[in-house]
Length: 320
Length: 320
Image: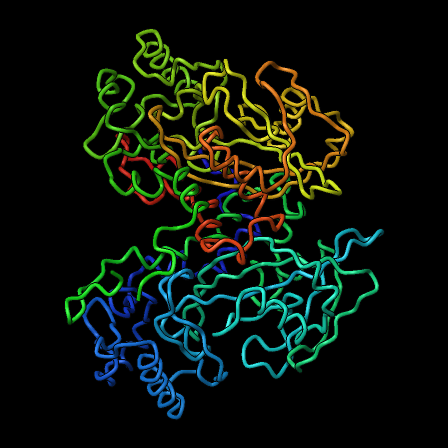
């Protein structure tokens, strides 16, 4: 009565790697839910909580929750107060992730279709386990000899995060003020100099969601995924200094590269989803196909609704 | 601080409809886990449990679990004993689902990559909340004027389940003895008379998973999804009497039809996944895009591992 595939395939192990928090950290329960009003918007690790204790005028640290001071009444005040805290932490080198300070803000909200409750410096969201949203473009070519080929980028060796690692052709975070499609267009131009007329072929293909943890913090990530078929003779070139080089690889070699330590772990889900949607990873070839697809779509949109919601100091349910 | 889209889009409501058990029944906790050895393979509703109590030689009904008698030592004995019970229930008209007795068996296993522990009559698996696996083919045409069009079938009015409802071009359950691809080929020939040479273009596109409940029982369903681009002049014809007619519809009209009561609820996930993968449902058009994609991939492969595992009568962990 033994499982056929107890240990799991290489692909399943990769999916477990970029879901290390979803599959184990989350269940451990040593993080505290982070609330803004009655909405949970994140999760705080014990090491971060210890620092928040020093700022009782900003964070109310309770035994089972961290609450942003409900005296801050609106988006602007919440954003300003949290930024004050983060700038102090940055100046005292409290958190390694803030070494990568970007001066770029992400919206903080309980789920994507909810109004933002505050904005937060991009490099700090992992301290609070705030859901991150990004956009990725799979640039591909149908080569007559090699079949389906995918363009990859190697990140610049001077990038703060994942320097020198292989990555999707184009990818970027969804910053305040930009829609999903606007972000796709902006990143395609900045990162790979893709001309407007080629971008007319951009096709939405879905999204992937996973929950990763590293020494920097917690990453509940959702990526909007686009496919772009490119002419055989088009070669992407970088425009913003963030890319070392581009390379066109047959689908099989892309997959092999995902298994090496040279690939950015959190960019693998987009590649795997592309290879699944295009029939390169199929149930006939992959024994853990179903688990794999499920681990590319973990239920992040509802994940913070699992926790009970504390009543805030004013006894108001602010979502009403 | 109100949600932008509190009530949810039409598409989100549809995804909630075919996940009615995942989103509410599952949490209620009035069903008992169904164990074979130490492996949970299903979930039993109270109405079914009441009948199982009359067969203590086959089912051990405990306060928090239903266990198949561990005295049955192998696949064959377990299958025979359960079939004996089911045939008695059928002869006494105990469960409406058994009116649709198919004489076709499904494998019962804790997850898809696990060895089967027994086989069970197809129409009975919903009594035990056993995971069902199926295969669906999206037959599509790229029409120069109408754009992306999809073939739908209307089910025969004499079918036991969902008679006369609209459905995917080709779909069928994964029965004992057939692989995923074999099932796809078999159903394509039987249901839509698709010739071998066209089937060479069949492309795996992923899978969908959802957990539906009806008066018949519990349906934790996973469908392996294939796309098949068809020539503009090809018209599917039925071979096995199970289809009333076929119709080719532009993508937008397919979606409209999914919203009507004339579409088989549990076939909508495959259509929505197809329209998402082909860019017809996109984040720019659909406010609940992320929730929608998550509800097309609910984590069924691990869903029965959430429950604590009772020690069986012999104190053996049979998965070791």
